[in-house]
Length: 183
Image (cartoon, rainbow, N blue to C red; front, top):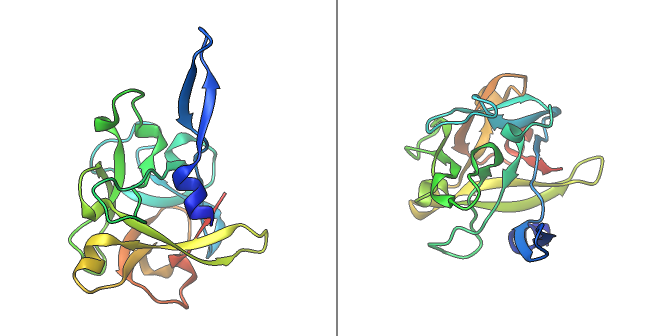
């Protein structure tokens, strides 16, 4: 249910001239279920570039740790891009940077790349609520699924500490590092 809300909610803001302008209703901060003191973000902070590593870092509230989840428009339905808010150029979505992981092998690093293909399409699968009742998900990659694998975003080595890289790995339901809670 939350996934559908995140995908379809559009907020309205009133511009200075009184015209209604659609904007993203909200952005999501993804805290790792294994240690909710750290958030998923890009290594370059508020100045992301193509190839910026995705890692977990102590939550600090900046745009580098904030994500928009628009629908993956090439399809299939149910998949989303995870766009780093620090990369958004208003009026020019071609410059948006999304989480990508390739090749589709275990240990492939998650990085930012232009939003363009199935390596960047993710299915946020609801799994549980954390102690604060925030919904938590694992993120299944479309490209891996198309090749018969269930690969998700997790923290390298399962060690959820400040500065650890996010990688692609086989889904292991008992690994808390593979679950991300929406804040």
